[in-house]
Image 1 (tube, rainbow, N blue to C red):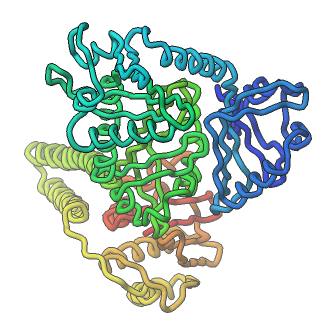
Image 2: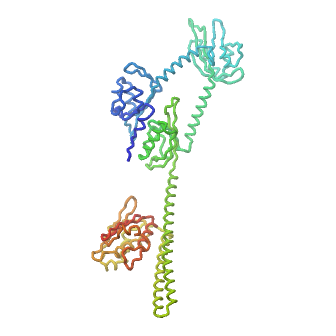
Image 3: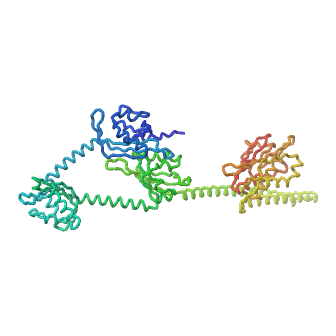
Length: 607
């Protein structure tokens, strides 16, 4: 059996990730973890985190202890100063890991070196600020109210946003009236007045109605210059943000639709942390499916709810998603209900990423396919039953064809001889042979009727005491047992109950007992032992004898065949074991035989 390395996916993960135990010793990590932190080691297993990062202070050590108590820490961007004086911007998250019993056994850290990204962002922010302060930049307008000259200035871009002519001359009152009546006009009036009185700066997003009647979202920045406690100038920028606001609005609507659909979906759904497999959210359908409240699902690991044998497949499927070896999560597994019973489920998952391509959430849809699996098993069982019935039918057809043809041929030959014979004495002998053949034909037809009856009669199973049934049969053949001095040992409890057809069980016991008596050794005291016990919710009945046995290499394949005999006994018909096997299988059981020539035979019946 191939040993599954449950950390192989972590080592190959495209992100910096590390698993640590409760003592902050490394359990597993990705190669990118060493690369991002410029560590001189390739394998950190067993090393202590604080030994590798001696610059970690008490504040972080306290955070680690909080994580080991169940806390979750993260930061989208934090500046770290290394012991060598270098600076590094890190996006990080730290959360607890859990064992199979839901106990915290360590923590998982994931991080990303975003130094280059942050440097670019800060550069963009500086440039953006310069653009905001420059009134002549495209799409970002500017305005200025000079209280020394009492003049209001709008840049060309500001006029374009308001959809007025380039020769339009604004004033404060009409400028405020462009804002949408109600909240927007009240808000801008309050901020404009406050800035004028205090010199405070404001950055606000509001709606205006342009000169052409179009609604637009704008970002208005208000600043003020004060001199001796009096405002001498107010100025700022004016930016059309309609497109961005509408995109954000559509995003919020999409999130709301997702949330509403998530909660109302008739399909079980989970939101999972793809790195830790921690459940972040669940909908009512999955709670109903597993008979678990949301509180019993959220913040637990998905591993706690998956059958142990199925988890390696789930882990590998998620690892394939993280390493971009697959686009979707699709697999079948078993989830545990509150009762401990498992539900057969089909999982379909999609990985959500942030703008940097980092995994954020794994959205999983879960379908209960228990009934489908049950129907599949029932269909397979029915198919097997039909196959067995067809095999029996074909076998029966061969038996009928062979045996009746033999009798027919025998009758035909005897009748021809009778017609040709002239002596009365010989004719009488032929008549005797015809009577014997007729008797044999009648016996064959009776046997075939018995076989048909086993295969078509409706079987009624009842609870019965096995030992009592055996003793009843032994009483019926007590003269045979006494005549041949047979020792029969019945090692079965008085209250041992089986569910079977009484008539069939009587026939089975009778056939096996008489079979052991018939094929006993003539020079050794015959001994028969019958025992029974429970095994995996089934009954196992064993018949053992010390008779002449069967050469299984030569005859093993046809022990239960119809009209199959192995010892040359004159009274052997080869129908008993065939009927026994049919009766056992008609009750849903099986019968097996073990035998060694000159040692004895063991029949094992399972019901």
